[in-house]
Each structure stands twice: as structure tokens, then as C-alpha cells.
Length: 331
Image (cartoon, rainbow, N blue to C red; front, side, top):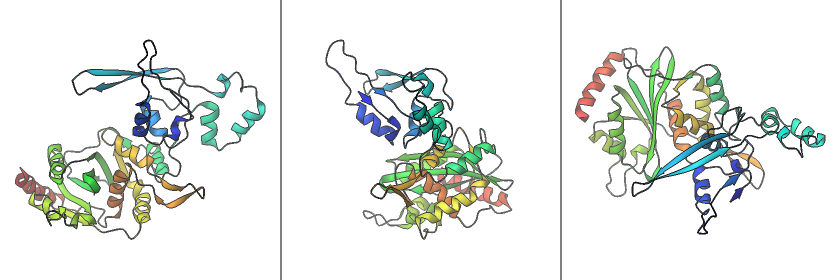
């Protein structure tokens, strides 16, 4: 199977569904998938991650992906990435008109197409790419941010079909530190609360979006009431007037954010990939976000940014004591 311009496939799961058709019953005919691509495209991030491509690839990279089957056996798949630049193409390297066309592109695309660079590329129309790049340059994405002496705050996005995104925050020295992140689906609110409990953090406050007040059709009980019965009280973040309100708020406050590189890697990927919806007919981006698997993490951060109280109370010890009482009631 040959796939041209692999990064035009926006999601890894779409690619995996496609290659599931690559199989053989003929002896000696080994199923293989060959792909070509430039770094630019909606699937840039997952392609770079799957093949372990560095920012400036210099040599062939070989890696393996393992799959555990339902019967306990393990399947192993070999992945090979071969970098290439214009000078590696014997037919094009001396074509001055073609080279001039590539050289005339904007800097990011020029580096990708001419030099084979995967550095700094992101999803076109991404909302927070510039903010994350700045956080990298400022040294605000580091390892080991968690401080056991400080209380932890959570912000949540409770999506449809039991989709959850939970961000774990601490506040210190006028900095909001995102120390941990969870995302999952197909679990109940009780299971989500158990996840928080198992972290072992000392919690001060929990925040959830306005729809936590909506009553379930089957029980007539809201998730807010369910959480309270399980020992967790959520502060309700008001409903944004427009979808852009959350985005603009987060852009404004992004400069105060620090991220744990290891525990928030999934969240950073979500924020990098969260992008505008594209109008295929008109050939322009719409002024609204495209809703996909990146939306939950981005929405959670938007609710953090919209929260009116952006600074914990001065007397944090009272919060810690109150939370310890809550934790005992949850156990």
C-alpha cells in the first residue's frame, strides 16, 4: 500500500483504519505500507510522534510498535523513517526553477520542503501554537513541577458520552502550574473522582463547566449532585457567551502558565492541534473551532482561563484543612 502526503491524514486512528486493509494471503508476499510526506499538514504531530522524527532528522530512524493481542500474544511492527531533502533527489536538485519555487515559500514551509525540517511545524489554523512556542522559549515547560507543600486545584471538561478532561493546577509566585493531566472516555463520574483520589494530591477547589448542573434523563439527578454525594463539591464555571470567549481568555492568560513536560505531554499535544474549522467551499478558516479529540483538553483550559477568581485565597492553610476533611469523607 502506498500513501502519498501522509500528513494530510489528520488523525492516527484514520491511518490505522486505512492500513488495516493491507494484508496478504499469498505465500512470500509480505504486506507493507510505504508513505511519503512533507512535514506540513494536519497530521504533522501524530506522524512525527509515531516515527520518532526529530526536529532536524539526519539519518534513517528504525523503531518498533508492539500490540498485545486478546489471547496474550504480542505482535511487533517495524517502522522506518528515511529523511530526504531536495539535494537528495537527483532529478530535482539541479532544477533551478523548481528550487526557486520552494525557496520563495514562507520560512516555515521553505525549511520543511528544502531542508527537510520538522521543527516548529504545527496544525494550520491552530489557536495556541504561538503561545506554546513562547512557553518553550521562556523555559515554562519543565519536568517535576509538583510541589507537595501546595494545594491542588482541578478544572474539568465533562463531555458527551462520558468523555472527561481533568487538569491539575497549583499556584505559586504568581504562576499557575499545570502539574498533571488526565483524559479518558467511557467512565462514570464516580470513576473520574476515583482517579483524582488515587493521585494522592491535597485538593483545594474543583471547577466544572455549567452543564454539570444538567439533570440526567434516566435519574433526574445532575452530575453536580452526584459529585456532592461522593464528597466532591464543584464550583460551576459560567457558560461562555461565545465559543471564542474561552479561546481569547486562554490566549490572554497563557503567559502565566507553566507545564510539567512529562505529565502534561498529552495536554500540550491537544493544545497544539486545537484549530479553526476550515470552510472547504470558500477556502478560508471559519471563526470557530473544529471539534475533535483535541477539544476536551482545550475546553478544560478555556474554563480555567474564564474562571473569575484566578488567585487562591491568601490563607491557603484554611483550604488545606478543609480539603483534608473532604478527603477523609471520600475514603
